[in-house]
Image (tube, rainbow, N blue to C red; front, side, top):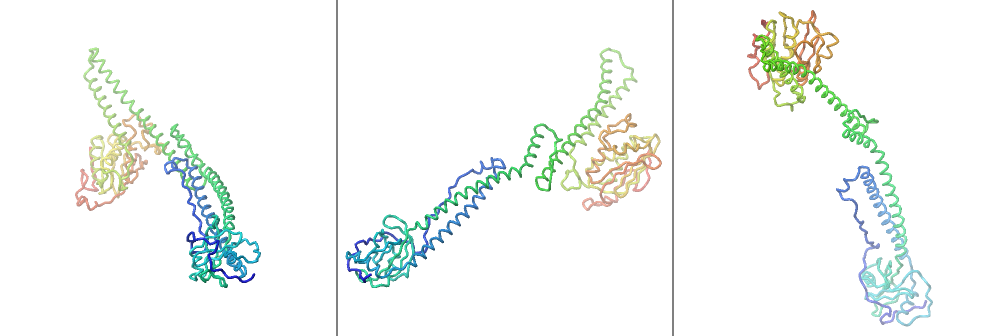
Length: 533
């Protein structure tokens, strides 16, 4: 092309600048804020557990896919934009082409045929006027382009819009040729290309990513629902079992357990709980049945005796004084038996508490076992005046409920008194926390020994004797609460030997000073033999 100079006149196609463009390399994109929506917290907690798990899985996968898709889209955009910038920066515009454009804008076109090009090439003056290549839409000059033209910047790449609103990527560098503007200022040359080279692939990529993300989220939700259903099958069985128990009160149901995971442990715990509840209910029903059976005998006797007294008063036929006295004595004895039975039932109905736990009943405290045994011996002598009771008691201090412990010791002594022959001897010994009560009665058949501490159990040979069959049960319960134990065995030479062991110490704790030397059984000093008639 022949050399041409920009005439000193206004460029016909020049336009005033229309706005600033960003100075940094790389185009900006409007960030899309994801629309919120979904279940409120209250509604979410009202959903079934499997639905919540599936929803949480879908949300987690959707979040991960969205992050990955956004990162992929942004990286692709930057790479495409960088590639376009590199292409624009490598476009070379020769001086003849620039002179032809300048001459055409000045109204004196040269005899030059312009070759078609995909790029928009224009000259930019420091004042903001532009001269655009033929057949292309003018792109308003930005301040950055003007700064390149007047030498303040070495070059700039930015995104702007042409006069028809088409987004264009523009690369502007200083022009080193002879062409100047009307004032003789040097010019900048801009090479631009439509941004659809970047936006069209990005739009297709966004559509693909959206489809893939949707399929992924849908698949994740489906997989999450399937996994939740499979994982929650044991929970469904447990729920059905609990609902069945609540609806039918059937405690015999059991849940099959496999493995060692949390659900299996929960199932085993549920099975253990229902088994314990079933055993407790069976014991309760057995206690009620046994109590009803035991109460029936004294109540029947009382009703018979009272009916006799009532008929005597109604008919006017007086009962002989001796018979009436015997009748009243029988009524009094039956009432005493009822009171004792009710007291025993009240003792057994109380919740089990362990005196060694530190947080048990407030009535648990340190007591002198030898003093309690001494007091119980006095009561036993009154109930067996024909017997001889010997005692050898060493000091021993235990943590227990005083009233319950005394009742247990009294029950042991009463049992020995009841089965001792007239004129017999009951030997009582306390040493190192072991209380031994030995009688010389008929003993206990070996087959009955495993049952002696069961509630209401009475040996067939002893059912004619007074008692409810609860005494030894109370002893065993009290010993367990105090952290000890009790057992019965047949003594060598005949009779029964009961052994009650309780943890403790031979000396009192510091808060009970001076009791070890003064606390002696009522019958005499420790270790002495005491006889009573």
